[in-house]
Length: 445
Image 1 (tube, rainbow, N blue to C red):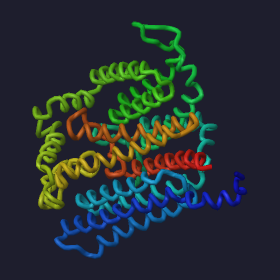
Image 2 (cartoon, rainbow, N blue to C red):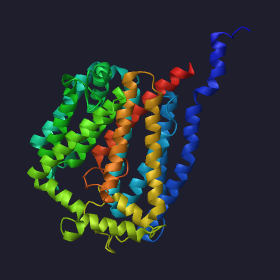
Image 3 (cartoon, one colour):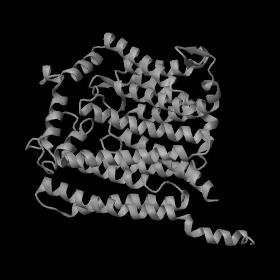
């Protein structure tokens, strides 16, 4: 049986070309419905009636993500079809809850969302051959470290942590962008040195141990994480960055010894920081027993636990939450950032909170699937690092507000208020979609 000519084969394959995007478009249908219902409910909760503003907000969201969907049909037709709808829903939940807390902050978050989508589109268009980043990994790594150093030297301290660079009325959190840049560097470096890092010539307690000279990257990343903890008082960024590195080195080598050694190093660094830094000491002691100072250091976590419990199974309903006084002022400081999950759990209940967690689980599952399906080392490690970043960041902040781990000042991806966070996360999302587009495109040929 003869094969049809090339042009005929392309015509036969053409219906498959946009199958991923058609799935994406169908997935947007429930997202759009939930957006419209959610925005209408929030507006009604604040103003006792639904006006045209709720429709404008929902139409703005639909228009923004529909434009991105159309671009993906042209620039990345084989990209994963579910990550963008999941991101749209998470972003909409965040904007709705932030508007519930403070309408002015919701307007600012919408502006940052549009900025993030703009940078997302730029990344999709100009980095279609993202593997060129592998040629500049040392430069990107240096830029990432430089951003952290500049923050340490010139950053402003907010709530005990030195995270922000401010100029006039404008402020950014450079650590969010460092996370992406350092992940790209680690993907390239570990891909080049994976064989050396996988080699074992020594054993300790019958466990293969790599040569000491190959432990340099592990010690270096430990040093960077410890510096973040000691100099920036940033337990969250320290844990997140080191956790991403351990996940990536395990993905590169398959050696469980690296996470074990890394865990021991981080524990020793945390113990050192506990003895040297009062802020770290307070956070650990507050985590162990917040009730001993429920009106002081433990106030936020105690109120968070009350709010989550007050939500019950189905929640108090939008606009009826305990975390907001009748005047509209939040009972917890920084409710729109660190503790937005507590507000969601209270007003939407266990069902709504569990639904939000399931959305993050689906997002991380699709991101890790992209890593597993990738057929070259750099792409696989980059996707694994980005996916680990989303997973760890979500766990760290949710665990903090639910008292599973010490509270850290990082944001819930796409949901919490924060311009730097949402912009950096959209760049990471674009890289994930570019990786999946290349992998799926290669398989479709």
